[in-house]
Length: 358
Image 1: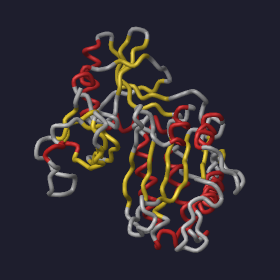
Image 2 (image 1 turned 180 degrees about the horizontal axis):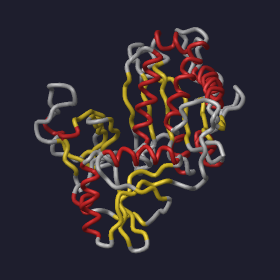
Image 3 (image 1 turned 120 degrees about the vertical axis):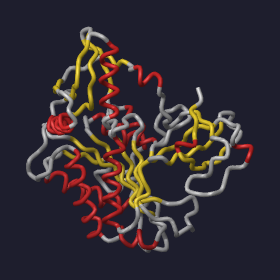
Image 4 (image 1 turned 120 degrees about the horizontal axis):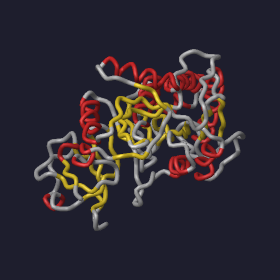
């Protein structure tokens, strides 16, 4: 069975026109890009579904995202070009990718795809971000609908700014969209372990391959191994299966990806075993004692900390308040509202300058 990908060309046919670039409509150009990308992905053997088969289609945000879950897609990608708060601001440029916060592994793929898009378009990469709503769910409707319908590998790709003359001049040329499609398809194919065309990657529906580094009847022994695996640079977790505490890394729909992870762990000296067994998640002692800051966390800014990337400090009244994390990219954290809802500052702060509250 071929892997399914859902592509969502943003907006409708005449969505988001950009008058200075005569003839540019985000909804039309992204529809063209989706069709070029569909053709390239099919060369790798993927089965591709689009949310807008016809140029004039304009389904709701929820319907777009739910398409991925209904057809059993392994990935959902919504294609867009960006715009600043003021459409008259022509300076912003660069590509950015938003990904679902329901799966932390999404960031690795988002960065690979975003960097490639920026490379092809000839501008800088702004980074990959998550954004949470007040309820803690994904903020963007298409991503939220896709994740809630079962497709957690959900992304919005902003291909530069159509308010930027250079970016829009690139995007209005069909040949440039074809270049983007070729390179984006390569990144997607590599992500699923498919490096050559005409050889469809295979998946077994509902089966995930997990790389296991140990199984213990005593939980403290599992805690110790988990700490070692994490210290070696791997994202790891613990599950309980038939009375045994098992330390595992990753959960892959394509076995070759699990094999690749197993090879990396072996190279670091760990014994490995690939299994399809799932279990009940168990919090390790490390996880219990070291909570991490994430989107939606309540934080305080350390006294006298600077605004991210600047030498200026926040106003004095900002430091005593508790703030909610809006988005994260690397060590750059954006805070927005305080917990009372009275203030909203939308400011970047260095991760190490924040203290987790609660």
